Amino acid sequence: MNHCGKTGQQDTPAERTPRRMGRLVVISGPSGVGKSSIIERVLRRTGAVFSVSVTTRRPRAGEVAGKDYIFVERRTFQQMRQEGQLLEWAEVFGEFYGTPAGPIEQALRAGNIILLDIDVQGGLQVAKRCPDAMLILIEPSDEQTIARRLGKRGSESPKSLQDRLEQAGRELKTARDSGVYNYTVVNDRLDEAVGQVIDIINRECKKDD
Image 1 (cartoon, helix red, strand yellow):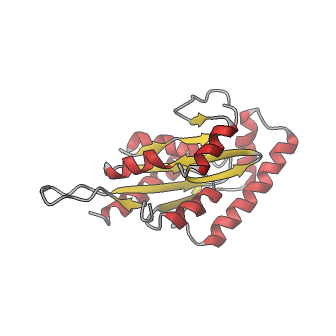
Image 2: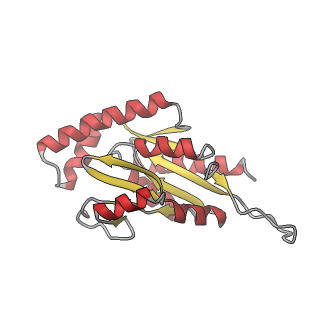
Image 3: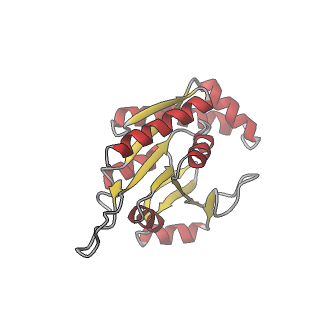
């Protein structure tokens, strides 16, 4: 998957109609920045496919196994990692997250746009393995916005909330300093952020036509 950001199944000599290449789109940002809300709306308004991540953490209230995440035991996750089944993986606050490579390959061969909701650690790994991937960084308008969104989850203690805010600052700095993120979108107003992400995807895909 050295060029998994922009790839498709090659036509055989017998095939007359070329297949449209798929595109891999990475959407990253710190916890609480609103990535899930943006992706949900982008999926509804485009023909993109969502890549469901694997995680060892417990489901949060309202999350659906197989739709929001694939929830697995640590032993299963480590086996997937050792067998090379993950495109990228990261440890965040003591839990593991990863992207199964198989569904990505299938979606790209089918010519689909596929969205990955992963943190900056994972984004850097994808950028290295898939140089043609499109990377979009979602930033908050300010720290208070993240604190407010995390507080609404009802699952954060004051200590864990502070840890996540500090981690958010480190993540954003790492992403900016890396230079691998092609675009930055500030999620100040959700509808505007969604529109910007869709515009970016459409603009990039037109380059492939």
